Length: 257
Image (cartoon, rainbow, N blue to C red):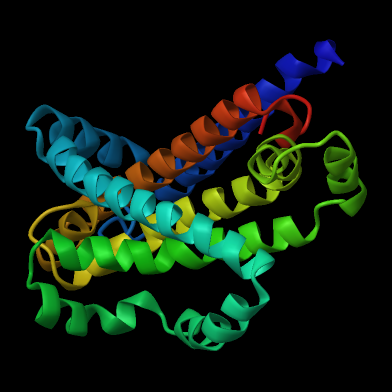
């Protein structure tokens, strides 16, 4: 099995190299619209320029702060709420209908209302991230708890586990993979919703940088923002999966998340 690991690491790199190669070849073809889609060399040069003048890092730092704050708040609220929905029938009957109603509302649809309530500051954009990342965690935690093997719980009771110990040593390890899926989905939704909110109303962040580049007709800057978003999102998902796989080995398939 180990002999295949180098191949698994090289193939994704080859995939990206192939995409860049096709992009470069297409950019040299006659009739290619360089204004709309500049060549990889032009985008790379612009990326270096944005890094050197600090513009990219400043906007990325603002977006990272908003994502981490909103994502953390959503997980802290969604986890206990999902546990309560799965274990408390009366609570579930009370809050499930309004939660189902709220789940159908796109977070960007309430951006104007959030701006009226919280102003143009950070609170409104963080609130959008909270709304986008709350339900993936909530639904996966609830589903995971409902999927816990009841026989495992019976074994814990036979061993005289207290309810907190039963939850910590039996239930949590069993539904943690579901929770992990919800967290990773929530992290992805956080970035998507935040960029939309920054494009609509913000004075900093990657979304704002993309909107400003559009007004200046700088497609190379727009592509730099898109590439950075893809890289940061992929790296954060990879890091989260690797950390969870190290702390909870049963939560990830062989070879890591």
